[in-house]
Amino acid sequence: MTDYGRPLEFGYFLVPNAGDPLLQTARSADRLGLDLIGVQDHPYQRRYVDTWTLLSMIAASTERIRVFPDVASLPLRPPAVLAKAAASLDVLSGGRAELGLGAGAFWEAIEAFGGPRRTRKEASEALEEAVTIINKVWSGDRNLRFEGEHYTLKGAKAGPVPAHRIELWLGVGGPKGLALTGRAADGWLPSSSWATPDKLPELHAHIDNAAGAAGRKPDEIRRLYNVNGTITDDGRSEGFLRGPVSQWVDELTDLTVGSGMDTFILWAEGDQERQLHRFAEEVIPAVREQVAQERTV
Image (cartoon, rainbow, N blue to C red; front, side):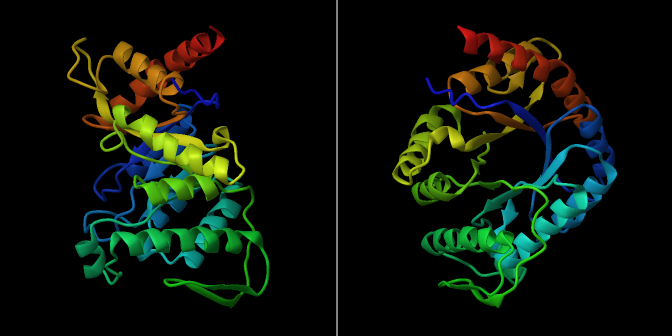
């Protein structure tokens, strides 16, 4: 069993389909008290609005919820410009921006949109370079310099400095990406569709071993989880994260105290507004209560 003892947070995952009531859903999540709203970043999808434009609109339309790309597509978002965008959004929103980042996928679509096609090794190298560059840009220092295989800085001037310390979360699943998370990131951001519960102990171990080697404590690293499923009404279970409220409460509790996750981002299927309300009003309070009880045993 692994429980890092971190505070629980909850959020909602938005697919930026231009025909959906995106801002209405975001405002509902804000009113319902969720902590975070994440937006998928696939610029090559013709049905989707741009993620950063939507994040800015959400921040302007809400009062307290924090926003982040879930996750930003690095091959189409140069890291220095990405860091500038995140810092700008953080300043304008009063400290409500975080940054999820991925090495890239769907390479044919990325290449069609003008981005590079990278091998797994190249994508891993580029991600590590990007983490370094992003932190340099957020530092506010002048005359930033970096020479990598994929990215460079040649005397760049950083600014504005973020309004708060933006957390950098990596959406990675391979050993090199997990080790990078342990060494240099603030959090790990997988999805339940591929980082299934049975795989979590091994994936955590890669992060924790790298954290220890870098002089960090494993509990410094947030463990987020995009939870893809549906809350059902008929009381029957249709599998993991597909069942009634009681099943969701038990499974999210076990993911916290048994599998080390601490931040759950609902990626709902079906009626989005209804799923959001049920998650916020029925699932979240019960999970908080049950986790608190488990942690006192």
